[in-house]
Image (cartoon, rainbow, N blue to C red; front, side):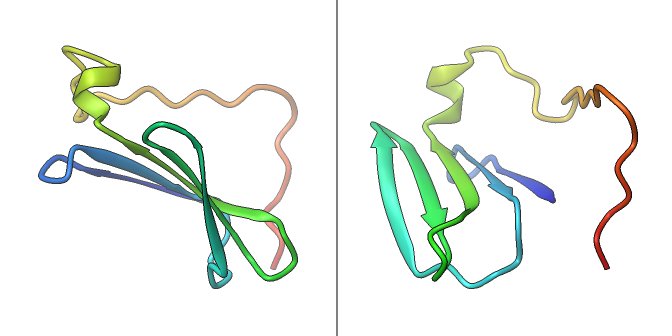
Length: 74
């Protein structure tokens, strides 16, 4: 899993899986889901990030994990 914040594009992209994207669907204005050939979501993009979260400091993102640790699949 990877999170990319592009301050120039004012966008955030969350990669859930490195599988090739075969379809993109706009779920809501500025919120796009990328799907693989199996129909699984492999990425999410949020556009206009500064309008969604005014005052956000992208250099101080907080990550929190809840529940037991689940080892990554190899």
